[in-house]
Image 1: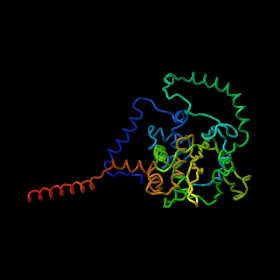
Image 2: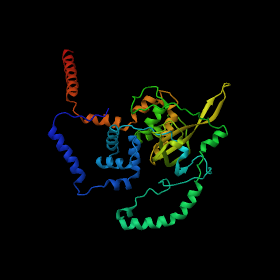
Image 3: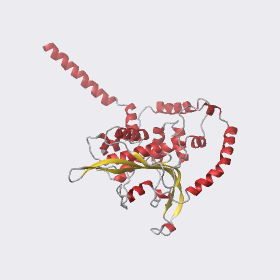
Image 4: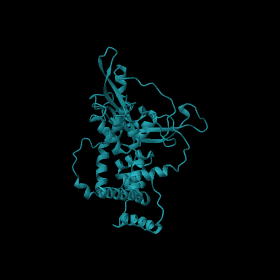
Length: 376
């Protein structure tokens, strides 16, 4: 929807925009984009994911302009994204090629390659660190020197451990025949940014909308799923955070082997494969327990959203429209940040004519009721 146009009151609108600038600068201080990029990693990753636009610098700029509002920052970044030409499509990305920074499994204690905790708040005490109020450049520099000095030994050990590709945990379950194997599907994915969503939605459309859905909305609906609206308790088979290499075809040798492709950089992603127990009925009426799985992948270290996405991915396969979290139209239409925020925000815009019409209807109804009462 994206309701943004307002007619009339040009001077008032210009003054309102000036007031926004004043509110941002009234304390005589401002945030550098570099500072936001360096210190607001979680917010930047969230904005990039919901915008379907990978640029830490521009996400930081949008956050600065939006004064920290994720919804407004996503709106700004998507608007900018829509002005850019699409010059290339990347080669197929294989998550197994990820340069892993963090890798855990809640299903198995010992996994091939080991668990790598990486950077996470999962094991921290949720207490305010008042020392941050007195953080200075000198303190930061001293801490970094001490950490990096001790890092040399750790880096060598980790590099040796992850020198080869880390195997997927679910592959071992597939070898045992405990979960279904997934055949390779080379069908060109649908693109919801270029073609309107239609129902029934393809899986590529579902995954794209889930990965760019509003983090809070995706998380809330996934929470509803595991509270009883469609799924029993799932378990994280494997969660990975790391850098994925991106390649594009050589313009001189298109459609050639990967050896001719150009490496253009890496993107940081969170990937989750969620194990979901399911009961199936056999022909003789007996019930059998099996394992299914859901999948989630999104930009940045955005683990909660990736987990929630994998839950909804599996839930939507149920297809029971009477269950809200299995109703693809209900889920996919209502988790989009720009669509939902835009529609709610448009209620602030002038509705003088339509409201006056409703008001007249209310007055006429009351008048008719008054006349009927007098006749009685």
